[in-house]
Length: 432
Image (cartoon, rainbow, N blue to C red; front, side, top):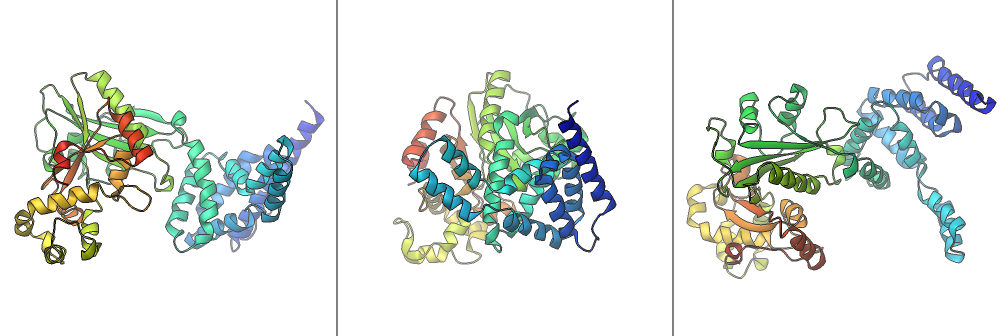
């Protein structure tokens, strides 16, 4: 046993003992957290890292909302990159590119808080705490733009820690531990699960549910998808959600992805859905080779907002200005009689919306961006697909099928990414 190693251990024990014997007053939790952060970043912090990280995590979790916000501010200001060092390193590399100047530049670019967050991650609940930190940060970002660089660092680290290689793909069944089933009920974001009976129907033999998990977040799904195994393309959500319907025992030919829910708000912007859909397609193709059609039954969350916020002068050419203004008046789209009378027109407007892009050449609708970016095509727009209050409020009752044709996914994805092309079926093109 070397003297250097023994010295580090003794120093780490003494350092940790000082924290327990000389804890700052509970009236200054940020002072205590700042001292722990500094020690965690020190050389002694390497030897006693797990214990110091655990202490810091416990202190953060014990803070009230204001102090947790203050801790995020502390990370954003006191542990950011040094602008002068970055400028000097960039100038040195520009004048003399090479391995040595590159290493200096790389070290200058990385803020101290990235290493601090890595060491916090050594605590038993470190990863979960950092995810919660980012959730709090995202809730404040609009009013606190100084947190943007901290979010950049958090997103960079979380993208590495939650890459596909670390994710565990699992099927969720009725016999899955109750603690996970309870999370499905709580996290379902598209179509509410109304208790255990409802959940049991969604996990029946003619249904499937798959999720991604991460080893650092025990019993916490990251994202899950619910699938109905059917004979035909489904255009209405109500029959799929009806917990009183009998199981379909016929041989399925179609898989309908009818709900995809992200579970961790702190991982927003870190995509798992594209990997999950591809893995589910592979799993179902292997388990049930009779399934040849893979499609979603998706909401259109931005359609009503687009209708009611688009100035009349920018309306599509196939609708007159007065008719467009009348259509978008408050309450008009809530009436079933009004909707039925304007069925063809509203469906055409929906097709226009789903194939329209923003200034970055991306689809206007967030769900469309996700599926089209993953290689799907717009297959069918369904009238009265979702007549719930939420469905009427988001998209006057319409839903859309995005088709994942296994032999077309790569080509569709490349056409979308390279040329901004939105692939549609002949039926949808006839509406445009």
